Length: 174
Image 1 (cartoon, rainbow, N blue to C red):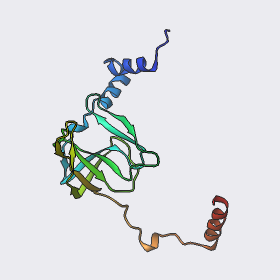
Image 2: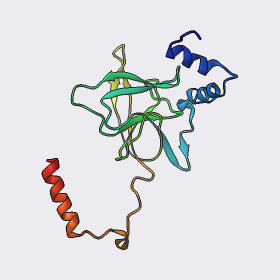
Image 3: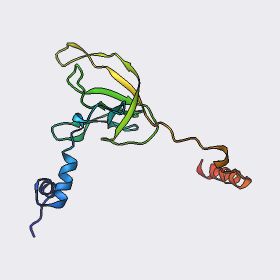
Image 4: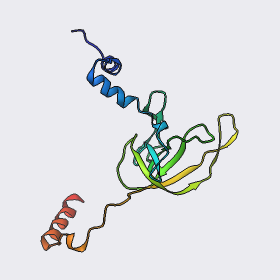
């Protein structure tokens, strides 16, 4: 059997119509996040491009329909919240409208979050020719931000052994 590179194998999988695995993979690669409906049930969809904690900018590439590495952030910097776009919209800069999602959950590129709008920032920037244009930023929170609160009878009782275990952990882990 001739040896092939991983890229060749992947290309075969994604282009072979008779391959069951290839057709499954092709469906994943063909998703066009730009064409998702903007709203659902009164909530605004935001597609995460760069998740919270990322130390590099990622962006959705509509031509290849994948999320690609753009550039690293300066040393010591990371995204404090999820950054993405609102599908089926178009800003003055020619890109979908930008959205920042404030929450504490871990996500990944391509996660679609149903959100409520908290506010917006009117931003002007210069294009490559030095012309001023608007590139507003929209700030969101997920529709379901926090887990349901536990009632008092569901909270476990803390014992002396629990406190001693925390003390041991502090001494060992510090």
